Image (cartoon, rainbow, N blue to C red):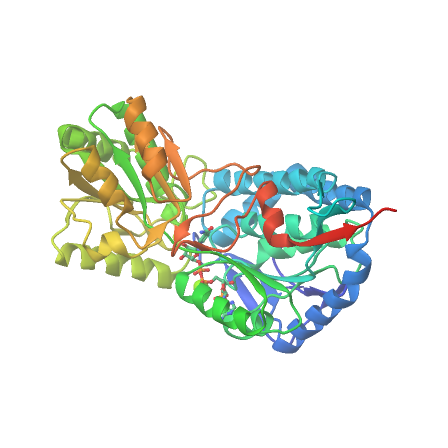
Length: 481
Ligand code: NAP
Ligand code: MG
């Protein structure tokens, strides 16, 4: 994998470029994962044109052909999960175990949508006019622009590309510039899967030029984006100009509520996993830990004791729990938010230090603040790092209110032994995914995923619900005699 130039994949051909992207391992800055050809806006336009050319054929393709191709891609990802997972961990900084898990999960997305290709049922109903039949069925949309973030370089691409192809659409994928390797590997597998030329295209490059060209094109029918709120809002505005369909998954500020009756071990396990694994670089991370007063001190004591056991280090080293922050800009932003929190009066009880380790990289110890309030910036703005804040509350009602008092609403969680509290929270939490006695991070692939408020916009991703985005409905009326 090291050395050489990894090219863009346009109309079934590997296409080079004059400029390249250097992919650096954030756990070891001396390790270069590879040099990747940087696509130009013209490359992107060629990819969009190729996808439009291929659409007629692919939209009419046999369902068993789609299933065979999606199964092939899924099976290869799963068979090569260790090797590809290592490359993913090297380019993104999450631990090797997390990298392998992400690749295996990505394979499951393809296999799931392989099966879904055979399950796209329509509806028949009687008309209000006697003697007339009505059929409601779904057709592919056309060309889908897919823009992905750096934090799940394989999984986000998988959960968008797989349903797009399953339902007969063509794709232009623009991965985050920081992490092109996973997307390139996916393109390499797809290039050997039997998928006709032009159906899937990869353009690696920056959001500002290639991403902008893709998302402002009048020749795509939809954009699916995962990333920050600012970019999401910009993409949505552009999409409306072209009447393109848009699906956005963005940031969050997820709350984990811990009630007095919680099992303390479960509460701490869920808080640690939800706040810090993946270096806290998950849109589903628990960044606000809302703790009822009666269990607060015990919880903080046990949480800091568990945090002391976490090993931060090179993502590739066995036994490491928390790998590197993705790049210097993100690390500096995390450290800046530490200062903002302290200035606002939050009390740092653990971690939050930049670490110098054996390899030069972007490491920091997981941080926990206490005595924070929900009005502080640290509890309102997404940090996207291994930093969590405890907010002490008097009772369940206050916990629910604080949990819902956010501009975001992706996931939320509650740790409790009370059926009544859990039931009430599931019903009244203003988030897209609610977890009871589970971490706020960690979702399945066969059920819908998405949030509310500034966290998501448009139809849900994943499971069968994905078809609401990737297909368009047609209503046929006929009089059979
Ligand atoms: P980002 O800066 O918004 O970038 C996301 C993607 O958009 C990248 O591929 C980026 O390209 C591209 N882009 C930037 N400007 C663009 C433009 N004008 N037109 C089209 N594309 C453009 O986000 P990020 O820094 O990669 O990821 C972190 C964010 O993603 C966090 O806020 C996190 O919460 C969110 N996230 C959400 C979910 C979810 O499902 N809700 C999942 C994962 C991450 P470049 O890489 O070249 O900038
Ligand atoms: Mg970015």
